[in-house]
Image (cartoon, rainbow, N blue to C red):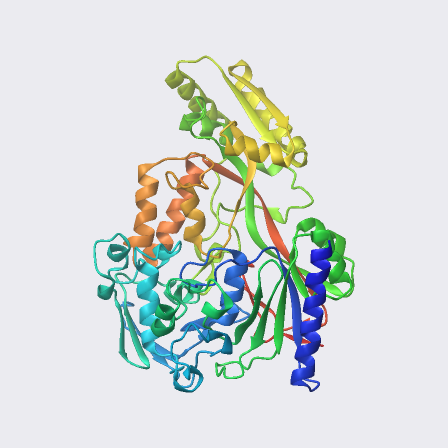
Length: 545
């Protein structure tokens, strides 16, 4: 408690100092809590939400997303795409710069680096960054997102030199990216932290410590990192030298490490925090607070998850029969749910410049069909050389009544050939049972941590750590590989739709309801641009009324 109080007082002192130093009524400082220290701010390898939040504000890519999730200019002031969609030519601004700090003394060898270091952001910074991103040695967790670039996959697999990557700086301000195949989503990929520039001279000067401390972090975005105290606070200051398409409004943004949601909610009510990511319970608590607005993104789909390695439910015919006998229209939506699900992929996911759900349409569930279901059930039992099967659904109390309704219909239609029951458990026990494969059917969710469709589809690939379904299908794996490595143009979207439908048709996951993550924003705070899955916030237009 004392540590948290000290942490907050330090932020307050910093805030006062900032306002005193800068002066004027136009100075704006915003405060937001984060759950943990980001650990590493190297854009090419950053993994945590906290790291990506900082990176998206302290770095500037070729392009960026605006508040409407549209692609707008970043360091690139313009770009052309060849008619076949394979060659992207970016023309960079000539007045964007890296932010030099006094803390770099001892990192950069030249004692007069403040006067001598070349700070202009060039096409070579992007060439170096993208080569790093796909280099096997870097071990970037997001490298596969760049597989559409010529030779990227070969380089990442160690089969080609990184110099062969289809990214070339033809001069200081012209970058040409050649793709292996057309990708309508490519410009959005370039907005990810993975694709932020990296100054080779500074990177080499850090001797493998790039992004690990303040003095090893080199920023070119609308803000720069000015303070980084582990488990305490981080501060971003306005980059006065930033010359992007938008003017930077806030003077500073303060991030306070605070894991206690009760404390976070209290500080939101007191208007100490201007915004915060919160749970649905906290959102409900704040719903009637006239000083705060809670917004939501639909990033989770909850449904029936089948354990495909269970001795009974490894049989696809039995799984399909149960889904076919589940009267989805009679399953009551819980109060906390947003809506009934219309697909495996959550609504926040996007493809190119539009919602994936709008582009792909609804993902059709297996239709209710008693006759066909009975035939599949009997066929499945015969394959298992059994006369009946025991089925258990595990869920939390929230879904108990709905699951009882589901199994009553199973028992009514399948009679003595099924023994079904529902076991209600706590959320923690449910997670443990799923983690330890101690379940047949579990009511659980799929959460999109980013707006990328392929990130969700990857959950179902063989051996993936998030594949709680234990689903293993060579055809699905091959299709997923095609989507990220060989499909082109409209074939990418078609592949995504087919992969999603394969999961539904195979009764791997039966979508039921959609849920969301929440952010609370004080009504005096303006101009905060949220990314589709709430994985980040852009503070560039942030202000206070």
